[in-house]
Image 1 (tube, rainbow, N blue to C red):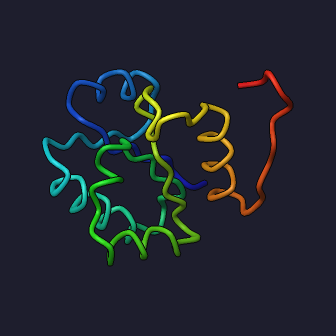
Image 2: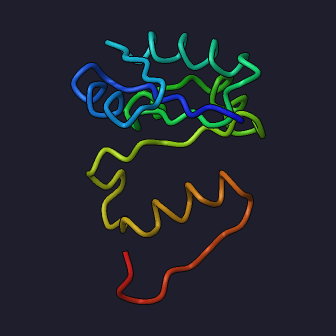
Length: 112
């Protein structure tokens, strides 16, 4: 069975640890990138959830590698604040699902 790994900041790490997932805390985007690249090479890791701020700070080469990865699937942990003005939570979730399974979904009006 593939494992879920979470890369987040130190403030959020305890909450994920209580949920029973493998948590890796980073103090900077550069440290998170190093952890991410290491985890991408682990054969038993199936999904890597990365704190949005760290994922957004990736250099272009690493971002391409993440975007092209089928296993593990790398998804963003939403920060709770829209990444762009006007972006709805449902759009963010739909994009994460599209990246994870390859299908675009649409929510009915009023669902978030």
